[in-house]
Structure formats: C-alpha cells, structure tokens
Image 1 (cartoon, one colour):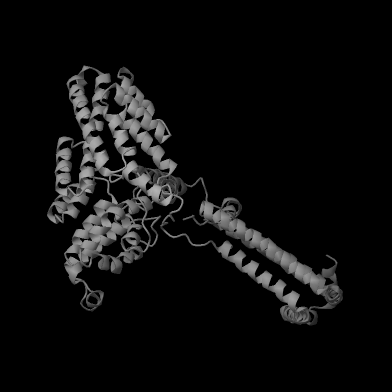
Image 2 (cartoon, one colour):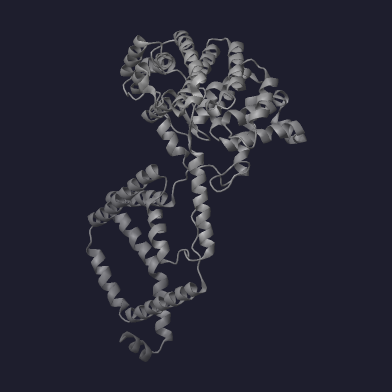
Amino acid sequence: MLEQPKFSMVWLWTYFWTIWYFVMLFMIYVYRFSLNYKDHLITVSMFLNTLTPKFYVALTGTSSLISGLILIFEWWYFRKYGTSFIEQVSVSHLRPLLGGVDTSSPNNSNTSNGDADSNRQSVSECKVWRNPLNLFRGAEYNRYTWVTGREPLTYYDMNLSAQDHQTFFTCDSDHLRPADAIMQKAWRERNPQARISAAHEALELEDCATAYILLAEEEATTIVDAEKLFKQALKAGEGCYRRSQQLQHHGSQYEAQHRRDTNVLVYIKRRLSMCSRKLGRTREAVKMMRDLMKEFPLLSMFNIHENLLESLLELQNYADVQAVLAKYDDISLPKSATICYTAALLKARAVSDKFSPEAASRRGLSTAEMNAVEAIHRAVEFNPHVPRYLLEMKSLILPPEHILKRGDSEAIAYAFFHLQHWKRVEGALNLLHCTWEGTFRMIPYPLEKGHLFYPYPICTETADRELLPMFHEVSVYPKKELPFFILFTAGLCSFTAMLALLTHQFPELMGVFAKAFLSTLFAPLNFIMEKVESILPSSLWHQLTRI
C-alpha cells in the first residue's frame, strides 16, 4: 500500500492562505463580472441559439471518443502492469508537489529499510523450485502434445530444466571422458532430436548413465520403456559412483566427479521409484524412496519426502504419513503445499465423515473440528490457489517441471496428484468447501501482513505466467480490483455516447432539456448576484470593478 502524505503545520498554513487568496480573487472577479452579467448572459444565449444540433452531436461524440481512448489505454496498462496509469502518474509526480513524505526524517529511513527487507524477502520467496513429482517428457508431456496439439511446457520452464541438468549431471572434468564430453554439449542443445542423437552417440562409446537418463526422459514413449532405460542407467551409474567414491579425496577434480556421480545416482533411483508408482507397484516405490532417503539423507534438494507422502497416501497408510509429517513439518524447514495440505487432510479425516455445517452452527465446533478448520486455514494461507482445483472450481492442466511455492504452479502440481486422495476421504472436500474462504477474513491484507506465514509475495503472478502455458488462465491472489479511473472513464464514455445518440435522434427535445438544465444550474448564482447587488453600495461596487 502506498503511504499517505504527511503534512506539517507549515504546509497546512500554506494551503490555507493559498486557498484564501484564490477565493478572494474569485470573489472579486465575480463582483466585477456581475455588473454586466446580464449583457454577458444575453451574448452567450445568442451564441448558443445559433448552434445547430449537429454541433452538440459532434461535441458529445468527440468527448465519447476521447474518453473511450483513455479507457482502452487505462485497461491495457492495468492488464500489463496491474495498476492505473493515471494513479501512478498522480502518485509519482503530483504527490511530491503536494508535500509528499519527508525523506530526511529518521522514521522514513526506517520505513525504507523495512521496505528493502520486505523486497529481499519477496525475492527469496519467489524462488523457483524443481517439481518433485514432475512428469516424463517423452511418455507423458509429448503424448499430451500429440493428442491435443498444445505444448504443456513453456520455454522458460524447459530452459530451467536444462540449467538443472547441467548443474547436476556435468562437471569440469567431463572432457576427460569422451562420452561425458558429448553429453555436456547435449544438455545445452535446444533441439530435442539433437539431444537424443547426441545421447545415442555417447552410448556408442561406452555405457553412459546420463545418456540413458536423457533417452528415458525424452525418447521413451511409455513408462515401461522409460523404466528399462533407467535400469540400464542405474547399472552404469553405480559403477561410476563406486569408482569416484574411492578417489574423491585425491583432489578437487575427483571430488567434483564424485558429487556429480552422486547426483546422477540419486536422480536415477528417484525416477525408478516414480516409475514403480506409476505402474501400480506402490509398495515397491515406497521401499525404494525410504532406502534412498536413508542412503543420502543430506540431499534434500530433490524433496523425495513429497514423493513418499503421495505414495503413502495412495496406500492409505495414514500413520506413516503422520510420521513423515512430524519430521518435515517443522518450523525450521521450508514449507510446501504438499506438507500443509496433507497435514490438513489428516486432521480433516478425523471429523469429516460426520461433519455437518448446520449441526456445527447449532452446537459449535468440537476440539477436533476446530483443529481441522485451523489446519485448513493454515494450508489456505500458505497457498490460496489450491482449494479451487481440489473443489473442481477451476480446470486442471499438466503440472510444469518447475513450481513457485505459494503460487498457481504449485497449486496445479499438488492438486494434479493429490485430488484423488482428498476424494477418497469421505467428507474431506465438503469440510474444505465450508471452511476455506474463512481464511481471507483472518488476513484482510495478505500483501502487508500474514497470520502464520510471511506476507503473501507479490511476484507470484509474474513468475507463474512464465511457468504455465498460454492457454491456462493463471490464478491471481489477491484479486486486483479495477482502479477508479477505469470505472470513471468507462462511465464518462458511456454517458457522453448516450448524450450524442439522444441529441442526434431527438434534437429539439434534448435542446429543451439542456436549457432547463442550464437554467436550473445557474439559478443559485443568479439569486446570489441579485442579493449582492441589493446589499453592497454602488460606490464600493464601482471601485471593485476598476481593479
């Protein structure tokens, strides 16, 4: 929110005397004009009588055209930048002229420091994360494109994936191994066919784990084919990992190789567990994820616990889900929609089957129901976009490969995989439907303050528009209200256009209406002038007219 100008007593006195000066000038001018106001009115009336209805049609039509152009520009500017151009100009240029904020005051310096801190916080909160449940390009994203003709991934999203692959799967010593050198160039290729050809070329030289990864991700057209390629990648990756593990302490070059081989091995095992989950072998997938988290407990960048939570929910193993949440739903760890909404689902599960809004309004909420409602409010505060997808008020699309926490992209990714788990719990969606909007009454100004989390970041809309495809309507929170000047120009345009139309269709009737309106408008002024003439002496009146 923009700060209001802070006026001092000096400014108040300045404003007072300025207004008084202009009022006195205006009164003198009115006094001078009133001596001959009858002659002026006769001249004006004669001029107005000579005007034809076409003039009024042209006048109102031009006013309607100008206000319509202003309306179009204001609407375009609002859609692009989210603010009114006229309001922005007023705040930027007119407010300093009217006093503004004293930049030399210590309070303002503290405010500016607070604004800088909030800006840094919003930038950190708008970090883009790898989607832990991202789909396979060849077996899922490309199949969607073949069927619908639409591209589910944006260039920005795929570019972020290319950067991730170069970070995880390459290192400075790749030139020492010919296959790795080829794959280092392959990850930088924009053309998918060029990447696939480079992967086959690398496999002709030796068994390259990263080459199998690329083929499993982009060439395999089914999950079964992708799983076969990942198993071959696992065999090659384990061999490289064992060799680099023995040499990791021999120098920084070997340490970088071991770090790269560790990332490759973790990625392969995680994707293999996801293949098992997609093929219906959920218990096997859970075991693979648990083993992976035990073997590499420090690699939290992949967020494997979110894959584990989804698989445990599929098995309806709610006790193990609660155990995982107890470990990762900690105040010191970053939150996600999966963490918050899964915690809400577990608490809703305890009361949702018997919950009735009518009964709750009569007797009040029980302790368990209150805990469930508070958990839902907490989840909605973290990501307010999710309920519309869970309640099927907004259509789902394929989730992107990267998500923005607390944004629409994260809401899509969560609902895409977890909607079935909410439907499976009887009454959970009904409880969510009855309670989720109450969150917004607790946080009336989400961009300024939060309740359980930091204030909602203002950058989510821009980042989500980059991550999500053009055919998807991005969910925006909080909803932006139309600025006053857009409504004003819309009303002005409509009013003047209506006047032009009526004047063109009924010129005589509109002339009578205009004369009646003007006579009514000037009636108080005529009354005041007559009173002034009767009260003031004629000598004073003549002296004022000489000024």
